[in-house]
Image 1 (cartoon, rainbow over the protein chains, first blue to last red):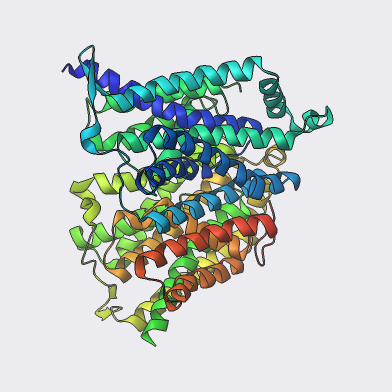
Image 2 (image 1 turned 120 degrees about the vertical axis):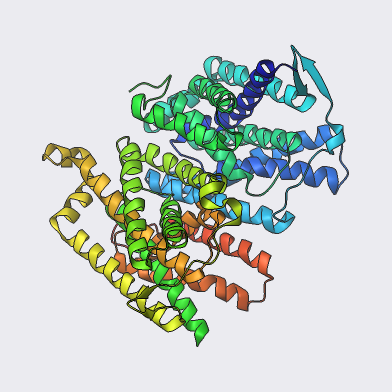
Length: 288
Length: 288
């Protein structure tokens, strides 16, 4: 096993996970200007749905993953319907909407802990991890799938936003919701769908984390921080920037531990964030 | 009776946290989800100065507040330059990172095991070790913090920070260096959180990193929101109500670990429901 190749592989794997989180986060931010804290808990819920379906109802892994992704999407849409849409209609200012999303995050996390307990749960038995060797680096099949899905999701989001009518409408809402509404766009419906898609991708991220390492109610916080940092680094709300930021964070963390002990991963992430906030606050792709 | 004294002591510590956070959120409009981080910095600084260097509590507490305030100024400067969204996201990330530093810097903080055996305050041979003197001591600190906050918000300084909250651009046009004011409020509020941390460390005599997690920041935020923005008396009310909630849940007969999650559920619901139906809080004087 070649250390450099392994670190390279680990960077891309981490970047792929962050990409899945950031894509949904940025999509929702782009359409609503909401820093959606609930995103992390929605992602965790995806993992728990898979756990429940496979362990309690005995579903196969593939259908359970589909159900988990769908379930997370529905959960996001429900949150929009119950909380964010009423606030939007009232033209609540960003701090209010943010605080509500933080509350939703807290409620969901507590709910998961009550239902499933606070302990760490594995979605896959440890012996199920089969590894392949790619250019001297060992990669599990789950990690391989994560990279494939992240690439697929990035390209899918790009094509979808660029070339479909729906994508154009989302961009129009992102530019100016009022004008879009005046032009006859049913913004509420579009935003609901945006929440569904963004949350479904988040659920996928939660499931892939669960398959790779495991799930825990508190994972949502980790997910939101690891989604927010690439988003700022890339330029908040910018989809391509988010992907670049996610990969950059993956590389910084994994190559950083070449020089300093691995438990300082979090500090490296924050260091990267700090550098960008000081020297390029608008992010890599952001416009001032 | 001793139970009531215990609750009153907790109330005064959380009231200090609530009042100081209200300076940041309610008066200056900076939504901080990192108050627990400074609570923790103050607690750890005080505990380490007392156990490792054998300093007197009062000296250690003041130094703890200074350390917390200086870091608060630096972090405030870093995030507040860039406007609301960056501040909010950065604050969540910063709280997350502080906890990870407390866990991982084992040579200094003793890692996840925490610091046991923190001495009680004493001054000139008089010990505040038993419950009543300690309660009186924390009430004195609360009165000081309250008085300083009241003076701050009623002074010309207070009028400027409110102007920053209302319209930063306009405040700048009138020649105020708004960043300076935001950094100054950050320093004051985080130093007060540091004092709360010093009291907490010495009262409980044991601290560990997870006490100061983002979830604790959510609790302090809930205190501010319950009472209302831009009303420091409201934060006293909020601290009173939210310190009582866990006790009420315990009387309702939930088992210990379910009760902890139920608490979080209630705090989360407080955030969501207040934002939906009464964003200014019970007796708030400002709504976003």
